[in-house]
Length: 248
Ligand code: 13P
Image 1 (cartoon, rainbow, N blue to C red):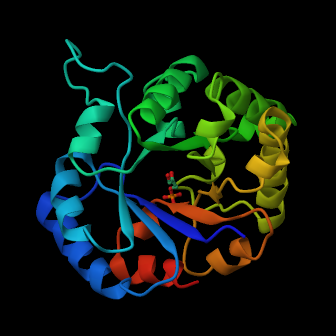
Image 2: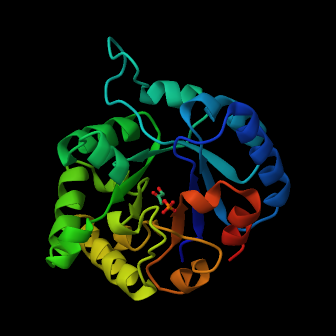
């Protein structure tokens, strides 16, 4: 049985002071919660939030990273720098990175490989666009993203990965996928990973859903067998609403 995992992706929101304030409240609220929680603040607030969360059940994630170890990559941040700032996790392949910043499966795969080598656990995002869903390509797209994005990852390493299914049409739109739609995509995802690495491994990989998750829809989603948690955007910015989601 996979412990429920709720992750907050703050995207490009919150100053250092706002992030610290949120982290202090969260540390108190979640001290005894039997759930895994992850915060992904913007780069500028990582270190400050990590210092506050030390010793709490809340872990730190970055929202992105560069694949190179170091060097002349103006504006980029390496995996080692994220570890140095206190991160245990890193979101890789978010649809906003794929669409706005043109990241493709090959580049995303490079990042997953480097993250794992650097002892960062990837929160690897997949998901189809509305057009792909309407033309019944959802499963082909998910299969391709999984096979290419997780290419050359050993069965030993895949155990450290978290998958986040985030249908692009449900992100920030208020249009949540139904629990049944998500369950279908998650069980398909588990099958694809099972074909690559065996059911014993695939059955233990957390698969999160992301896309307009809120306090009202979270329990319906979490009642599905293959939905192990949520990756929350907008509704994670307010401590009260995020706490309701964590306590679903
Ligand atoms: P929203 O919850 O705002 O739809 O964002 C989801 C998301 O992209 C989390 O990574």
